[in-house]
Image 1 (cartoon, rainbow, N blue to C red):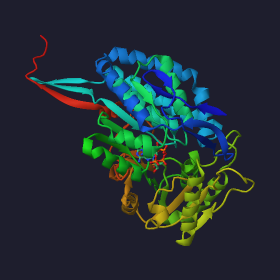
Image 2 (cartoon, rainbow, N blue to C red; image 1 turned 135 degrees about the horizontal axis):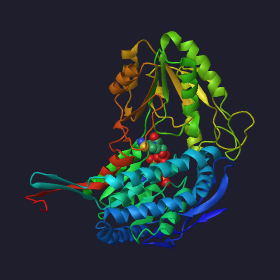
Image 3 (cartoon, rainbow, N blue to C red; image 1 turned 45 degrees about the vertical axis):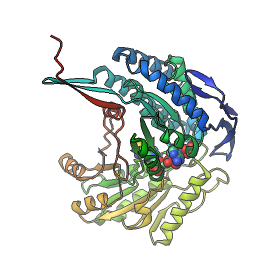
Length: 474
Ligand code: TAP
């Protein structure tokens, strides 16, 4: 059993001011795997005060000093990747290969990207007699979700550190272990006292205290639309910057010239990665109407080939994170059926042989874009296939969504793929599997307003100042 009962404030592991704990449930066993403390507004006060004090000196550090610290963090991170991976497996049920692979690899990737960006980032630009300076915005509240716990924390912490900000991290109650280990890594690497602080607890208490705190300058939030809106409202009276990374219902367009069966199979298996709990998942698979049945056969075979079981075993898919998440996904599957969608794989209930744990069947429907299961984010292993008549129709369907986070295009003709990608109203489009840690990531429409990852992620943490009549040093 893990007991992570202390918070990290002002460079020290400290007890909560008012002791209160909660169990963390292992989604594979439905049993407690450990416990964390639930903080109060008094803990937030301490953490914000520490971050404010530290900002005075950390904001004045040189690029080289911050680079040295990030390199020290990188060395510590690499030493403890195994522990981080095991924590992710236990807290959110990721299969071992995924938890120890892509989950912790995303953290390492964001760290390397922050280091690369910091080496060359232009913090100053002389424009005639004006110097434009980018300065750290101040004390940042980082509020993260459970679905890719290492990705979500590292994509905020490292750019915040690199730009000279100080911060308070509020990790998710459902997946708090990896964040605690990450705080240990930062401590071991020598992050100065107060620069990074972490308070565990509920969003309604800790998140609200941070969003409304007059000494918090900026909030970087990843999570659901409803909480994003609440944070923005809470932050509005203080005129804080609020960067929101919210949900998605991304289209994955398979063009007519693509190797359809192979691409549909890959897209189906891809949807089931992390039990479908990925904001940028290609949850709407758009295929040519003339080849729908070919796509259905490939998707059925691929979904039925996704093995589901104990995250510690050799399975492609583990459970979903919680009972609440399991119940929500079951509701959507039932809704799909009652709305008349054609169920081609999976369906309600647990997979055969799994009596315990929040396991969901890899599920595929064929439906139309007006149905609830095609419009709302299910955040589970549920793919909807939608047929299109021609490319204009495919793009119309792709863009007919309240969200605009990601998109995928696969096809043999690169020029055509590029043209389709350009017409998609989303912040991030992967063409034939393209992936890049330096590419800005974030959403249009209800998917949010921020851009994270690599150099573009730095801008969220920077103010822009003009120094007029600034004579360049001669
Ligand atoms: P949320 O319920 O929104 O929770 C996200 C974080 O916000 C948690 O740490 C939560 O705390 C906290 N929170 C809850 N209420 C709050 C409040 N009133 N004020 C401040 N903070 C509050 O999301 P989730 O269920 O963890 O994650 C799933 C959602 O996140 C999906 O919609 C998904 O699409 C989205 N998501 C988006 C992205 C990107 S990059 N766009 C990435 C991942 C996930 P507790 O839960 O600990 O109480």
